[in-house]
Length: 464
Image 1 (cartoon, helix red, strand yellow):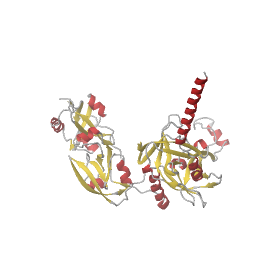
Image 2 (tube, helix red, strand yellow):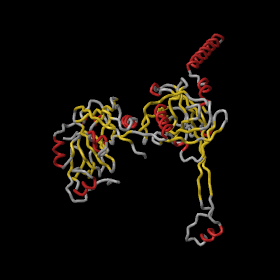
Image 3 (cartoon, one colour):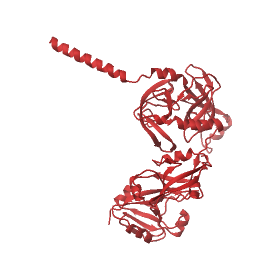
Image 4 (cartoon, one colour):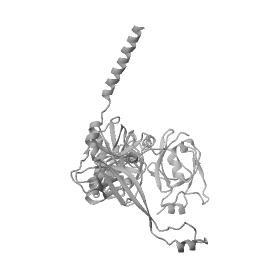
């Protein structure tokens, strides 16, 4: 019995020693928080909501309307709406970086430091496309953050957030980098850093630190179904934010480049249909008339492989590259067209600051509908009136979608087929002749117009 107890004691001691050894491997955030915490600020905003009606909200034909209007005259009435967020100091004289959505529509902005001092802040500039805002308070000798390089971040690396979730100042949370270069809907200009750091309302605008105590991002968004943290948070890389802040500080606005193309993701099936060995690049689905791309000779169905010497690995890379290029610059663009590479020079235009087309075409002119068995769809030619309305020459309207491959590709009734590969569809006969030349099992790329959207879809021709 004593031997057994001694054995158990030794095992317990081994577990404790092992736990202590493992504990030493865990990161210690205390030094980081003590050194960098004072540069993080709490931001509270007040919005004045003005309402001029004080009597009950009743219709004018109500018999009591005149009574209330006479004896309860209209008087200005104001209500205050308050919200909280975070930010951080980037200069000793009081420049602060935060999110636009933290200070948007605010009539009053109060910044509170960790030493409890409070300052009234003014907005120097705001860029909604990246959700970066620059504030200024009148103070000096302030603590500031150290800027890091988000490009050196590695997936799995520890990161720390400091902010004011739900108003709890200087709250510290930690986690790891889950992914880099994330693209989110309606955010084409930011390659987000995804983390599992606990981020909640009030953390927005606060810094994301690496283990060297350097800011690598601004905590901006979370994915949630409950309103709280679910382990999916997204930060704006600090290099992107600083580029924006520098322009806001200098001019109060952000200038971006544009070339006037609509692009889409190049899937493996589409890459095969265009003769590319791998699905890298940005597929051009439409080109704006008289835009820089049009003047340079870029066409729909071109695949942009390089922009200014830099490879376009993913379609999401291109908008960021173009936007970061100074308007008026001339840039060499490498394209893939009809099986060969080609270079063109594009002069970058300026993106403007923040005419409706038909939603779909339908066969109302009595034209014959013909089934295309190899695609699993039924189509008909557009009438002259429909072509004029959509400003196209030729084209086929999809009347029915029956094939499995067509459905899987996302084709819908009412879609207008404009081209197959890089060949414009001018008639049903020409379309059928082209399909006869495509071998069984090959992918074909169809340029589809759906309302105001133009995109390529890939369909495999498995049928005889």
